[in-house]
Length: 212
Image (tube, rainbow, N blue to C red):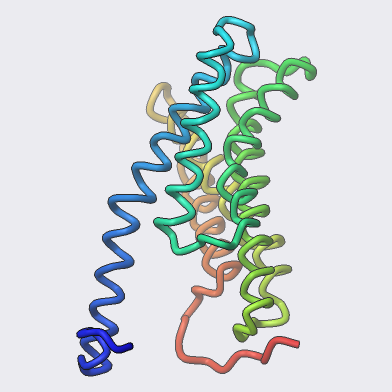
């Protein structure tokens, strides 16, 4: 059975598919992410025992609905491994807060390593899940894609975050002459590492190795 879209030229069908994909992302994935994060904030009340059983059930249902909306809006429906990727940031945040209670770190050190830890862990999980599905679908993937991401992109993102935190110290005090230069070099180096690790450095139509 053919539809009206089947009779459109290939270019028009491509534009229609992109429009549909963008619409799903804007009106399904983004509201779903909002619901998920709202539920995660209220989950602290569950852990503290400050909510009723009905309230806990509602929070969990909202989190499940948000997760399903993100799956649908990103075109990941049926690829249930992406649930781990979606929950990567909340899980990293929860584990970070748990570790912060165990480790005797100062407030400044917690502000430094906490977000760095969240960026590293959540990005690594999401990348590994995506790499698994790309290989399973037979998409051409460079053999060094995952090592480059883990060894370049993630440290680069962490360096950028550290440089941004250092900028706050510069604006709030009287830094030495070399401090802004060092921060700028750290941010530039982190940006270059992130570009290389994600395969965005001088990106062009270069052939990739076929997936084994």
